[in-house]
Each structure stands twice: as C-alpha cells, then as structure tokens.
Image (cartoon, rainbow, N blue to C red; front, side, top):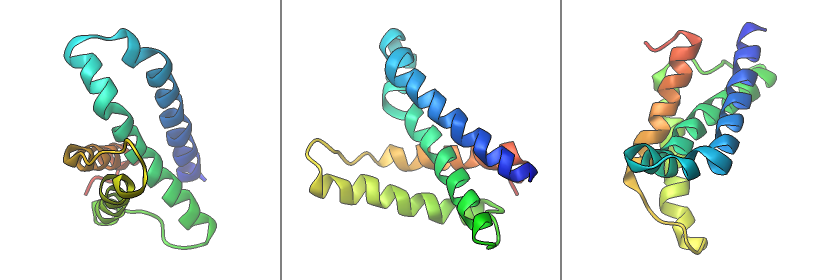
Length: 119
C-alpha cells in the first residue's frame, strides 16, 4: 500500500510540475534556468511519471513491481525511442533530441531514489 501511495504521489507531483512549468515557470524564468525548464524539465518529470504509472499497472495486474534501474532503463529507452525517433516520422513539429533520453533516465533515477531503491 505504501508503494501505491508513493506512485500516486509521484504521478500527481509530475502532473502538477508539468502544469506549473507550462503555465508559469518556463515563461517567467530566464537565462539557463528558463532554457532548462523549457527544454528538459518536463522530460525529467515524464520519466518519473512513466515509471510510477508502469509500477501501478504492474501491481494492479499482480505482477512483480519495478525494482531497480535494470527495469527503468530499458522501459525509458523504449519510451524515448518512440517519442524521439518514431514520433518525428508522423507528427509535424516533433524533433529528435538525443538529450531527452538522458532526461527520461534522470526521471527514472529520481523515482528510484524516492522509493529508496537506487541499487
């Protein structure tokens, strides 16, 4: 039950950050901070949300939960492949950014650190 609450909190937190960043933070911050908020901060929190959502779905299906970076790295690489490589093929305006792969992984690492299992 504790992990379910953590995953739900991570999802709500990532969503709240996304909204705050889209509506306020990225628009008001300037310089390097504004650039980071515009380009990569949402991708980091997307990594958090993806792993939290995956963990919730696995637990709901009575499957083993996400336990380590051995689970998060391939999951987030696959998501990055879809968003960074395939999406530009069918969505106008989408661009490939290899640094987004690192941002997704950073989000997965944040999720692991938050749940206390970075090993």
